[in-house]
Length: 287
Image (cartoon, rainbow, N blue to C red):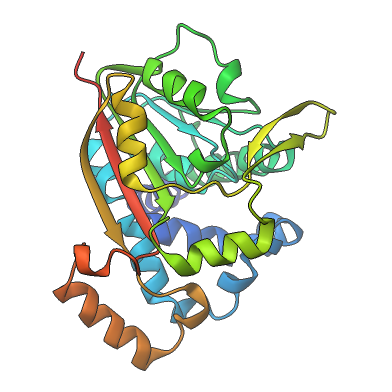
């Protein structure tokens, strides 16, 4: 029995010490054992030779660097639009009581299943709640030290109401971290226009027949984010632009080597702003 406890302890420790990308890869590599292979269709570009995607994994980790510095066992966390739960579960391993909300039923179901599988491996329950819920349906008395959105803000409508709601969810001194696609990038804009035209607000019908407004990749600049939240008393403390290379080209070693060098020399440079793929916006509530 003591041997089994020791093995369980080593497994638990290894999982808790993983970086975000290591936990992502752990789920990917165990998808057959977990019985989730059929649910991983949207990961096709990552499941093919993932060990050659070191550039992608480095930037995946970077997107959670700021969040990592804010997480403590006492930090209450909310992820809005937690999707399949990958980032939420990593944050739950590192921080305090965590909540993830996701209105799309299959994604919320997969996130919950992943949580169960991770808890089985850990041998303990995570202080993490996953709800199939819309931002606007949350209880008015809930507040958090940290609110995180990863490529979710541009889907939430109506936008002004979303901004007001997000600010209200923060405790005084709390932090809002929003990770988004870079709207300064003309290639990203062109891809979005070709995919959905110029209609950026549509309607989405969920599995239960509920219809609500939906942002169709309504991406925005960090300056626009700052103006939106400033009107509701939340000040921007930092914006970080990063990643130049799309996943489709990230297996080319010569190209990734050249891009890595360029990114080190011109890190977060205004000169490269139209070419970065992502940015991270950080705001803090001061009262």
